[in-house]
Image 1 (cartoon, rainbow, N blue to C red):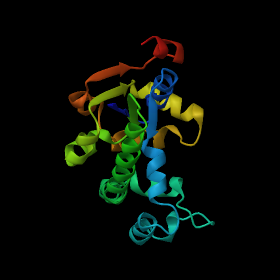
Image 2 (image 1 turned 45 degrees about the vertical axis):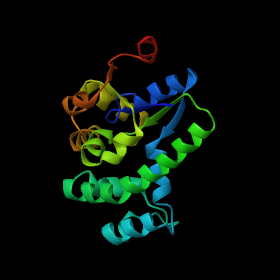
Image 3 (image 1 turned 90 degrees about the vertical axis):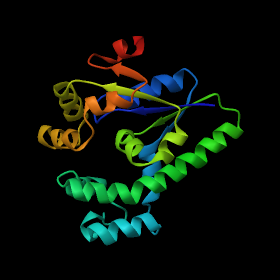
Length: 192
């Protein structure tokens, strides 16, 4: 089974690329969605996050409030690193399990959409053992900010903070087998 690691920063369009690949027949796993499973209430990941960041990152229903957690970690590189140390290994285990299942089902192409693949590949050989090829989606920062602000949830300043907290385009390009430039609209992206 061919496994593509699809990455790119916030607002670059990696989710759109994943959707296009899904339409073409690939099975797509979102590391972000699987990461959420690692900190569901009453799991070991949830407990570690609460122990590390406190009750302020909890929603009234006891779940992790992603916006509150993001506000804490995207302003402090050390805290972001600590969160990644909690979530990454658990997420990697879930992805490996899902990929084994897809292979057993006869899947030909799987795409793992993962924002933090660049840092993870450099830090953990276990990631590279899961992924055979890396595709990187890039877009100009102003385009990224505009996209994120339009879709809602973050203002321009918060978006730029997240962009700065992630790997740079140059760092992503270093590990890329394929680079998808996405500075235009969805139609242009489909053509690429």
